[in-house]
Amino acid sequence: MASSHWGNSRGNKNDDKMDKIMESENNRLVDNLSNKVSMLKGIAIDIDRESKQQNKYLGGMGDDFGGAAGLLTGSAQRLSHMIASGKSNRKLMCYIIAGLVFLFVVLYYGLGRAVK
Image 1 (tube, one colour):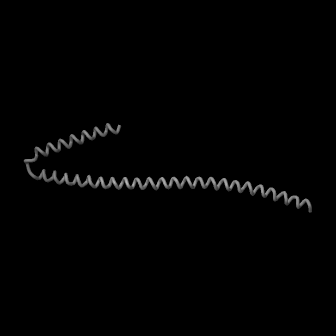
Image 2 (spheres, rainbow, N blue to C red):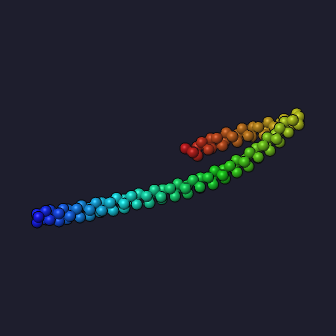
Image 3 (cartoon, rainbow, N blue to C red):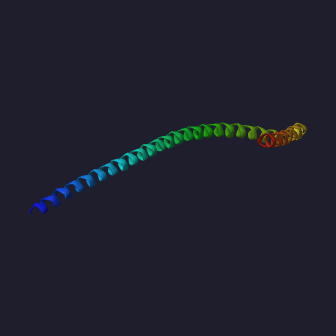
């Protein structure tokens, strides 16, 4: 009977050691998981901030394109009116078209070199 009592107390000591080892391992894994969750939270906050900034930027671009479209529409209407006015403005129209082509070529090569 004494030997069975000795085995039980020895088994309890081993169980206590095993419980402590498992508890420390669980605590280490919980800390590791907590660090990873904190890192993911930071990444999610950064993604949210970046998406809001990009949406604001795109909204501003939409307004700029709307203004440019209005300007081009007005210019096209004035050009159509000038073309419809007759032969008297053909010389002026040729100068305007030549100037626009020259401006386009200068901007094309100028921006092409600036990008490189």
